[in-house]
Image (cartoon, rainbow, N blue to C red):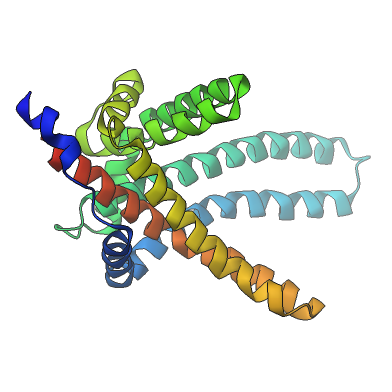
Length: 247
């Protein structure tokens, strides 16, 4: 009780410290993160084969009953391929969490992938549940929705790090944030503003159409690379709150 009572007198790490640690993690593990994030590309391959075969069958003509039957089979295979792609994307996302959680051990991508596979379904359900709750609060008013976003922002970390999913993870996140809502919200906002400024600033000074198209591609790359940075940033906040509240 005493630890909880005095927890609000202890501050979370400042933004500059969180950014410095997160940047260090990104630099030291850059290719491991990229490897995990590119795993969904494997899910694209079956889909690409389906499109190629469909093009070949279309070239052969639709009047042939055998060709029409094969096309129906390809539709079924295409649906399965899409599902496979989604599953790979979810596991890859969980894998990033696992890599960051396991930084001291520096687990291999393969190890992290198989660990992520074990909780991928629970991760998906928790992500969906959190999204629905935030959406529900947002339907009432924008402010309750924003409050919910911050309150639930550590739910996925609780699942990955502690094994608690569902409502338990959501309640756990809310308890961690309690008393630190403004501190957490401010730090999350600072990170998003920094990423926005990096992406948006060049477009304010250079209006050349060719540059804008090229910068659009660069912006997508920056957003892609900033994903593990953002996750590490939130993980360090999560660790801070657990230490402060002694839970």
